[in-house]
Each structure stands twice: as C-alpha cells, then as structure tokens.
Amino acid sequence: MDSSERRRIVVAIAGRISRSIGAKLFTLVFLVLLLDLGLIGYASVRLHRQHLESETLRAAGRMSNVIGRSVSYYMLRNERDALEHTIETIGREPGIVVLRVFNPEGRISFSTNRSEVGRSVSQAEPACVGCHKKAGQPVSTPPPDRLRIFRVGDTRVLGVVSPIPNAPSCSSGACHAHPATQRVLGVLETNISLATADADLASASRQFIVYSALGMFLAIAATILFLWRFVLRPVKVLHDGTERLGRGELGVQIPIESQDELGELAGSFNDMSRQILDAREETTSWARTLEQRVTRKTAELRRAHDQMLQAEKLASLGKLAAVVAHEINNPLSGILTYARLIRKWIERGDTLETRAVEMADSLRLIESESRRCGDIVRNLLTFARVAPMNIGEVDVNAVIRQTVRLVEHKLDLGNVLLHLELAESIPKVRGDTGQVEQLLLALIMNAIEAMPHDGNLSITTAAPDDLSVVIVIEDNGIGIPEDLLPRLFDPFVTTKEEGKGVGLGLAISRSIVERHEGKIEVKSQPGRGTAFTITLPTTAAEAGATGTGGLAVAGGTA
Image (tube, helix red, strand yellow):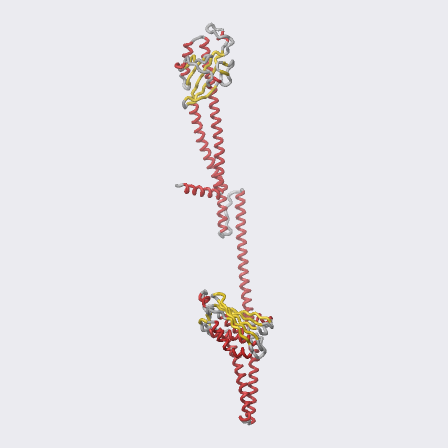
C-alpha cells in the first residue's frame, strides 16, 4: 500500500469520525480513558518504585548497622581473624557485592575482595565526597546522606557508607593508640546489588501495565456498551425515523425505550409525525373537496359558457340576419322597382323603340343590384366556410406586384401615389398563393378607399430572420377611430359608409393569416393614416416546427 492510498484511508476515516456522533463519543472516551489510565499508571509505577527503593534503602541501612556493630565488636577485642571471617561470611550472602573497611586515610583495611586490601582510595572520588569536605579532612560527624546508587556494568548497586566511631571503650583500650579527640576511626562500605529489586520492580510494572490495559479495555467496553444502549441506538432509531419521514412515510412511530432526554425527543418526534400525518390527511381531504367543488363549478361554468355561446350565436345570427336583410333589401328593392316599371311599360303597350334606352338602363341597374346581392352572399360564404388551401411556396414580392397590377386603375382614379419597398432575396412563405393575394388585395383596397381624393400608399417587405417575412401596408388616409381598434377584426365591424360594406373583409383577412400560422396587427390615428403589419412564417420555420408542423389544408365551417 503506497503513501497516497494510506493517506486516502486516513482521510476517509477522519471524515467518517467527523460525521458520526458515535465515533466522536468513542474517540473522546477512548482518549480520556487512555490519558487518565496512563497518568494513573505512570504515577503508580513511580510511587511503587519509590516505595521499593525506600524499603531497600532502609533494609540496606539496617544491614549496614548490623555489620557495623559486628565489626566494632571484633575490633574492640582486636580479633582480626574473626573480623575477616565475619566480613567474608556476610559478603557471601546473596545480594552483597562487596564489603570494605577504610581507615581514616582512605586505605582499605578489610574487604571481601582480598585483592584490593591495602589499596588507597582518593577522598576526592564521588564515593568519598559525602564524608569529606576536602580531601584529607574528614568530617567530625557522620554525614546525613550515607547512601548512594551507582552502576556496575548493567546492574545497579546500592552503596551504604557507615562511619566507625571512636567509642570511649575503644580509645581507652590497651590495643589502641587513638586519642579520645578522634571521632571517627574508619568507614564501613557495604555495596548491595539492586538486581533483584529491579527485576521485582520491572515485573510489578509489567503486571500493572497488563492490569491497566485490561482495566482500560473493560472500561472502554463498558462505556461503548453504555453509549450504544442509551445514546447511539436511540439516536440511530431517531435518525432512521427521520429518514423514513423524509421519504414520505408520514405518521411513522419509533419506540420509546427510556425516560431521559432522548426518550422525550423520541416522544416529540412521534407527536410531530402524527401531526404531519393528520395535517396531510386534512390537506388531502380539503384538496379532494376543493377538487370536487372545482369540478362542479367548472361544469356549471361550462354550462353557462355553452349558454352564452348559444346566446352569442343567436345574437350573431340575428345580427347577421338583420345585416343581410338590410344589405340585400336595398338592391332587391331597386330590382323590384325597375322590374315593375318595365312591366308597366309593357302593359301600356310602349314599344321597344320608344323605351329602348330606359329599358336598357333599368336592366343594367337590375343586373348591378343582382351582382351586389351575389357579392354579399359570396362574402358571407367565404367567412362562414373555410375553403381548402393549395399549399406551396409563395413568393411574397411577386404576389404583391401581381396585386398592384390589379388595382392600378383604382390608384389612378383615386390619385394615390404608390411606394414599393420590397426587400430582395427574402425567403419564401409556405402557404396558398391565391389566399395570400386575396389578403393583400383586401387590405390594399381598404387603404385606397380610406384615401378618397388623394394620398400615399406604402407597401414594404422585410425578413428580420430566416423564420419570418414581414409585410407592412400603410396609408395616410382618414384613419380608424380608437374605439373600433380593439374589435376591428370582428365580423360586421366596418368604418365604411352604409351600403358600401358589411364588415367581413378584415375578419376574412385575419382568418387567412391565422390559417397560415401568422399574425396581423394594426396601428392607426384618426386623420393621420393606418398601418397593417402582417408576419408570415417561412418554409424554414415550417420545416423546423414540431408536432404536425404543417399548415391546414382542409377546411371546415366557421
């Protein structure tokens, strides 16, 4: 496993710990227990070591005193052999490294190591500094600290220094020549091995570490069990319940296993879940009731709408009947009048030679009025029935030029000046050429009739993009009143004088534009003129359309 993989694992573990409350609690408890038990273990081992060393030192001191009294006893009797025998016997005891007796000059008088007898030891050495202020100047009283610990190889050794005082019994003896003023006759040094004590201490330390680790393991296990039972499991149950509630399982309940804060939190969660479920059911009930009411009201509105449509149809039918009756009644009256007049001439016996001119004029008037009736009926049929469309590509500029040629005589009679501004290379429109021509012809004729004496007529084309073609037909005629603009494209709405139109031309024009999936707009100011703007989709727009994407080619009834 390389370093990057180990780093990734460490980061994943750290992220897991940072996101889990259980991991955080476990980490905190583990670190606290580890720190506490470590400090307690360290303090205990240290205290145990100090206690063991103190006991060892006291035992060594007592042993040194016993040896010192034994040495003093034999020295008082000047039994040198017994003294050496005692020192050798004690020196063979387990734990005794060496026993020495120094005279005041620092020369070894007796030793368990016979090879060093007679050797002098410098008073400046660390072993002698405790008993001498200066080299060669022994102190008059024993030092307060007679113990020292040093190493011989890998073994620690305890050295006990015991001064041999000049007792009165010794100074007055026949075998001694020491003056009474000399307080110390020599020094007894006892070196005791601490190997056994160190081994016992190491064993005790290892046992303590084992017991501490076992205690820490048991404490951590008990803590984890406690946390899992009383903290982590309730939190997990609460977390699972929250997730189930979030997934839409309204009214979910979780078990309450304690009466502590987590138990109270679980109870609050259950209450909240029930309230959400009740609110959801109440909302659903209200929604269902509202839906039923909306359905009922929609049906009522539909019936009312159907009744209004029926009423509008009847009103439109009545209006249409009135308009048709009015429009057709005038020419029919003229036809009837001139027919009666001709019949009277014939009944009176007037000859053709005498009434030829009058009869021809009357017949022409009858023909004209009959044609007018036919135009009225044809316009009504055009508005009421949608004729089939012959779909093809329409060149708008060519249709405009063709339409202008048809109305040249009207332009000349009305003294109207035409301005053509046709954009070059505009895309073709998908539609019916005949209906587009009918649309343009109706709008151009309306513009000419809005300028009865003279004026200017402007026809422009443009292609703002590849998806549409814009046609603008603008005049500077009498304009349209503002109150008529919102309903200008409604049937039977007209600005012409009575008898010159029935108000179906613009309605038919809008129908043609809508069938070509375009739009028509009008702007007008009374006395300043009118502008019609027609926007038709191109073949590119029709090809990119979704769904059926085509124009209506079959008609129906309006």
